[in-house]
Image (cartoon, rainbow, N blue to C red; front, side, top):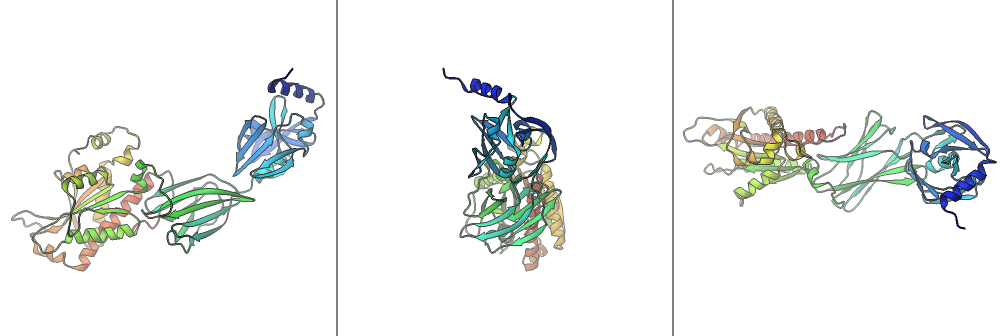
Amino acid sequence: MRRSWPVLAAALLLAGLAGAQITYGKLNLAGQQVESIGLYGAEYVNADALGKLVNVVRDGSVMRITGLGHTLLLPIDLDQERATTDFNTVQFDTRRIQGQAATWVNGSVYLPLSTLATGLGARYEQGKLTLVQPELLGASSRAGQDSDRLVLDLSRDVGLTDEARGSRVVIRLRGVKGEARKYTTRGAFLPSAEVSRDGDDLILSAPITAASGYRVYKVVRPGGVRVVLDLGPGIPRGSPAILERVTRPLIVLDPVKVAGIGRDPTLDVARRAAEMLTKAGWQVQVTRDTGSALSRDQKRQLARQSDVYLALDLGRFPGSNRSGVTVYEPAGKAPSQLVNSVRVGSTLPYGSLVVGDTGGTRRLSELLRGELKGGNITAGQGNLSRVMTLSEAPQAALLLELGWASNSKDLANLSVERRVQALSVAVARSVATYLTARANNNADITATAPGATP
């Protein structure tokens, strides 16, 4: 009569226990005190206790242990004495050797410490299993045709997180020992990377442009693990669309055409600022050039997609004697129901990534006026409630008035190279600083993102 697996296992266990040589003891399992047993001179640990350190799963007659960058396959030998010999074949990652196997004891699966230590790259002595200290051993790089590669060699596997924030990729390596330093490469897409410390963790950050994607993965090697960062336009960008608000924000510059003054200062400032931002890796769209312009509906649609919307204009009012630069913030109710619902406190998934409160606009206004002051330009502050494109923008939106078309001194200033450059730099630096800070606040990583401003 054929017996089922549980019945057969129980029968063999009962037969084996009669002559089993079992002793009980204590084991220091990577700093945790657990119980162990001695079985025919070999030390074993309960699978449940080991599960506090690595992932342990029974798959039929095989125990699968995964963790620390390794995968171990240990057969369950119902003969306890035989399990402690090298009769069975065990698998460490892709390598197979003869070694001690798992076995049943008192209805539970137990695993041999010497086999576990070899397969997991740990140190073992009677009563103690110690993990290798995670440490950064070195770094190397390789330049490619459409992507570059940076490789970090670690003494063992660790947990990591990665995220694109503004113009940087940030990778956190948990609990890794290593020195802070900067690496330079020969790559066109990954020219440098910086390693810094944050408590017990190492932080790797590298620049990324809007045209590039990146991927991070691990490669298990004998004696350690490699963390690989590939970055460049040849790597597909894989961010969910909703997270594009953080990983690839859209900056819209809308230079209003002012007729009758002989020059086009709003377009000049917008073009210069856009060039600086683009070179720093940001995604920028200018609504017009010298020969063509988007329609009003097209501009409104672009404003709805923006993370920063900045209109540039000159003041115009018949008979006005006003002058100077002014930064205007939109006021009043937005036409979008979604924007209003979020701003009055409704909770929506990722709502803060889609719609910002008015604090973002105020912060950008403060940054812009501060940058203008740094360029020796004093800017006033005001509010506007009837500019449709500003009220359509779900995040930060401003109107920068470069001066007044009716004021000869303002027009003369706008023909001075130094003045136009100062206006352009103020726009670029304030926008980049604002978006970098927003990305940092939306990320669960405390490392800073240096070098984000142009």
